[in-house]
Length: 93
Image (cartoon, one colour):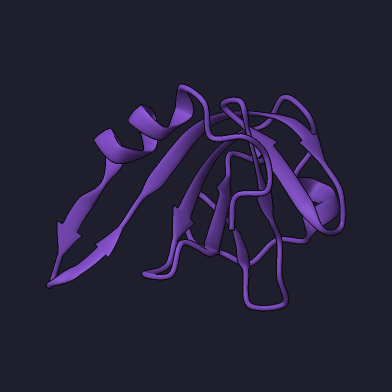
């Protein structure tokens, strides 16, 4: 769920909209500009992190939210309702 103004980022999200198996989902990519226990900011947008948000590395292995820091490149995937489904981060261990 997007919690900040949509602005020019609506076009970027719309451009990332993909039809996959009859289910629509969107993806946002870029470096993290802010992160807290409840939200993440990427590409000018701020998105709510819920208990249903999966957090993983680029290899799909689970990671913890504290590993997702400002400057880390991420891919955000959204569910059909627009909620943040997955944070996929380029972390180095």
